[in-house]
Length: 321
Image 1 (tube, rainbow, N blue to C red):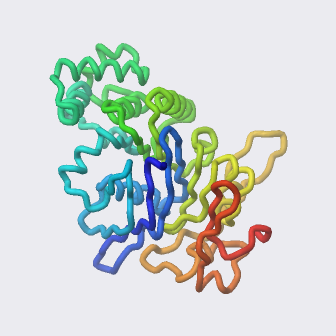
Image 2: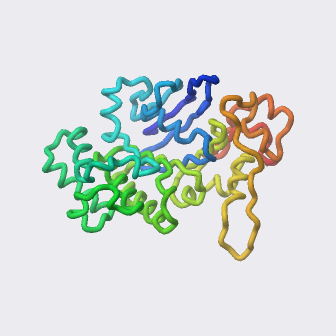
Image 3: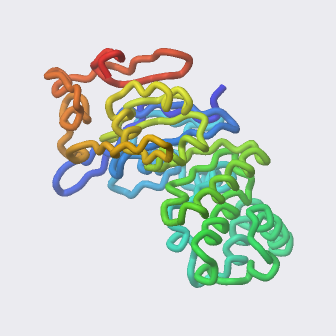
């Protein structure tokens, strides 16, 4: 049985100019101990989809569908119950640790606050557990540095602090929203290696939101490709890279820099992402698709399943992609 089941999730935002359709008909499952990568360009709906299951959307958001986490429906939960689930059972690493950490509080106070609130333990015990977690994420001289302020850490070390904070209560699910975007390549690799090691230690499921297919290739068991608020393709990461079955996925693959003897010019996807307030009635990718047919502008076939766990949403036969 899947730990997390998302079914037909819809997220829209009411604005003075009308409704903005951020997520449409999103469905997927995730099992314990596995990693799901959600990829796509900016504005694809990647973050809004997970903010919905965390109950972190603004008041002008309208959410429908079903999100089941370990047998409990997360949508429309009372705020008190949702607060119990956050951190304790579902942890989150935000994109920018400098804006996620309180700059006026020492790291020790922020870590202790999480444990006291969610586990009800003493501050003394919370400090000990916080030190153990900082050691686990390899913060050097943790006993001394735990009493520093966030600005006294480098970008990579701040991200390690955020990982430590998200794992303090041993959550069953960890959501990482672009966790390596602001880091250089070497630190990115260190952070992703650390997440994999901690996942094995705590048997935590991970949802990794990113635009970097290279990170997905080295870290994720499954990959979900989003465009214009919709799922375009879902598969095991190995199958997706070996045999992409959607034109958008193939376009993303073609834009990946490669290090090999054969120097190839990077291929870009022409055009711009769709206006989420004025989406086409058919496939959202139709205006940029190199193989679109006339009916792609007006209708979109239901998801097609093939192989063990491969799903795509496209009107064209696979051999035409």
